[in-house]
Length: 339
Image (cartoon, rainbow, N blue to C red; front, side):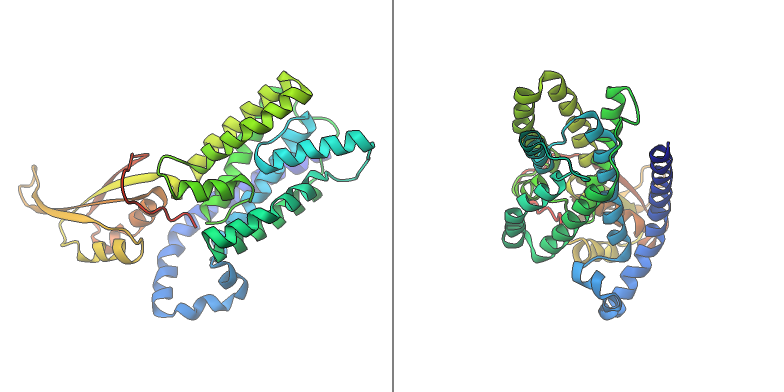
């Protein structure tokens, strides 16, 4: 009962923080951008944020996402003898093999330690092939994730008896948590690093898809050793996780936007070029209803960047409106800014 109460309180607090944080980010982002333009040294006020190249909101969001994913693993996946995907799933398989072979009885799940050790060569890839900032963020996220996996208590019995419900809740929570961490420009290590590296080279690849491909190997091993039922439920969990990762990792979703404005769009184009590092095309048109001159601005960007542009619209024209579409197919030169 105590674990159930802790879980309910954590979930309630989580959604309160997410809801409040999203609203707060809308208010603060404009002010933070303006402050940074006037004094770029303001970030030095908090040296730890300067090190990660994060604001306090993204820093908190990353920790919250990692906590949510760790909660999903320890409360819904491990108690049901299921396996997550990626490097953590591989670590869980190694843990089960070690524990069963040597008959160990430990007070914590050693898969968190194995997971941390396996990530070391991937840290090197992140540092050399992606960026130093991404490396620092990933090192921080993996360390926090390992700590959470060690300290969050694992129930001796599943909190919910229905296995499918555990799979649904665990998969969705895990995907949302990892997606939140990815949306801050960091990662929880493992296949996320490989996924980000490959998705930067191809617009058709996403971090979730790369993780699912790796999971086929992990779950094949799981099925051979522990049976088809465990494998099927673990795969279902991974599918739900993949869906939620790709939904929350907005930097990885390609979008297009049409903006209609009566004002000449010089400032808007400047914001798109300088702040979002994207190009834009605009042309003059005539409104079919008012029969007056208007401007149409067209740009291709990520969903995250389109949301940023939408929050700044009133600065350029308080009567302008935007039409956007997500998941568009892009061929040719288009840089993905994932970190």
